[in-house]
Length: 451
Image (cartoon, rainbow, N blue to C red):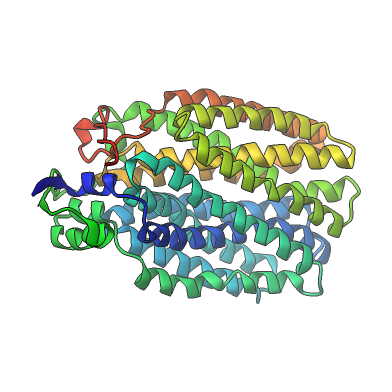
């Protein structure tokens, strides 16, 4: 009979089909999120022509969703630490799925702005909760890799949005059909609610040991050795809050993480939301610009694959910073691109490096915090990032008018470089157990090797 904690048993598990269901179930929701965010870049380009929108109105449509995401990320993390990961994950899918579907029926900018804000609430809440959820199930030795694989579903969803943008949006009322397709998450929310287990780490932190034990035993299966269940987590009667992110040695991590999230969000959304419109402004017709964007988007997939491999070889900080430096160089090159081959090559490099960096960032974010405030910490960082992403769509058209694409992408390159420097303020927890003790957050314990 072996005495082990819930956390150590989860960390020592071999990868199984149940892990695959957790990653796949969460990843489908993640992909649907990306599809919605990506679609708006194509829809804005189409509405600009159909509704004769000016740059300011186009920027508002892009930014209002990020306002909702900023609010949702912080609120969603706090609620997930109180009510559970799975519950909030399903609720957020339902909220933004219904709001996206309703957007297909709007007749003017005002109602579209309202619905895009509601969509943002759902999206902002879901992303940090999903990464926290997967990280709490993942064995420690491959935790970073599995979260990067989860984040790779973003590329699947963004590619789906590019396909819809290319084939559907240019049709008559195509943007309405695109929004209608985006309502799929509302249906998928039901499957999430009933098909995925709650996080045992969260259940343990709330004193619900019997439920946590049942779920862990399901993952251990028939091959599990007999164990005596013990818990090294003392349930807390108090509510965790944002202030806890600056206590017990967490302040340095939090400050560095917030800086990375802000710089990456500003550059990513400033660039990728506007790429279809930038290409149209350079003289390419709508269909060709959408086609080029689709090709650029496909480069996200090998970027994620490379990051998923390197993150358990180089570690979190090195992988994140290298991909961010690559993003900075690619942004500079893309800003000077004039020929079609240059647009495609440098755009693909930007997509490759930037989305690989995103994978590493989502992997490291929940690792930095104990269970009590893990979703709160990831959500707060995402909130800071979403604030930057609100500014980005407003900045891009202004900077384009001022200095063209070279100025815009030079600023983005500087932000990527600043994010790379900030990444070295993060703790690298490759191969280590997730800490459940606020006081122990700076000295995470190593995990025994897989037997």
